Length: 463
Image (cartoon, rainbow, N blue to C red):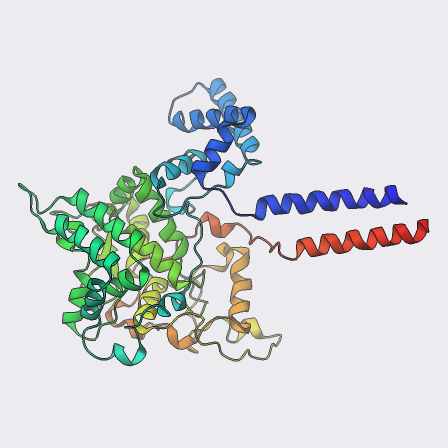
């Protein structure tokens, strides 16, 4: 009987160990690469994969091409068992560019559409409410008075870190050069450091401050010194700008992070698929200081966009508009900006859970401010047939007990002239196509409970 117990127990232990390995903290790609290069088998497969990526555009003969593809596929399958396959990077880390280079060397051959790339960054999962607890000058009563953006700038000057990095970008962004408005490269680098190094309570306070007059909104728009960091003599085509962004590891990664964390979902209370305003604002601010730097379009709205348009798009006009409207008409991002300015968050107020009924999915689950959604296929709507498996479950969860107050979200009327227009702003990412992973916290308990039961039965029978 004892042998029989081991027969059932060992597979359970193996399950537990594999779950712990896959569910634990992932290594950053620099450490994972160093670890892989120390193992002969991993090192060989990794070098093969890097050759696959480097030779992706090379013209092979049909035979050698098929052989190369098989070898590349074999290398990738082998590396799936290594920590390198699951590695991520942290924004602003010491060796961020090197980490991202390693990440994309792993995943470049796996990406089909450049627009659908996964974020290479480790999820932060912070909340706006965490920021508010550390922001003494943000309060609901204070928002309606004075110039909040001016107050945020004053608060920055009182903080040594914020003052240091703000001065560091103001200088290169405002110093003219021969035949140039400024040194754009140095300006961008200093802006990235500002948003990577300065606590969000100060950097967000200047970039997402709530305004009630043009003087305030114009100060908000001028935060990043747009004459240097944003505007150019001519507006490039947005798809060409995107291609340019893809050639830089930082820009490519920040753009993928933005698509991942600011994905709109009109059936959620917050209008964000991930229900996290803080992650969306972090991803947006991460784009500032790249060639894809976005900014407020004017001083009278919350609409933002990179410095580009869709002229000369030819047959790619639809793709270009979809890309541009993901910025301009992104209800998730607009709600996140408004929530920060108002000192609110998705989960700051939790309504009493409604009574569950069998008609839950057809009543209020997909309404915002008691306003029914438009017909299927309407703008800012993800068609049901392309929804990830977790989206419908998430919507049910939102209806039942978790999301914040519906008053935190803007309706179409609240946007005024920013009403949605043109192509849908939804871009489905590969990360959303993957089914949600199961939580592992209860797995060890289940395994050890089963082992205890088996062992007790074994001991009882042998006695």
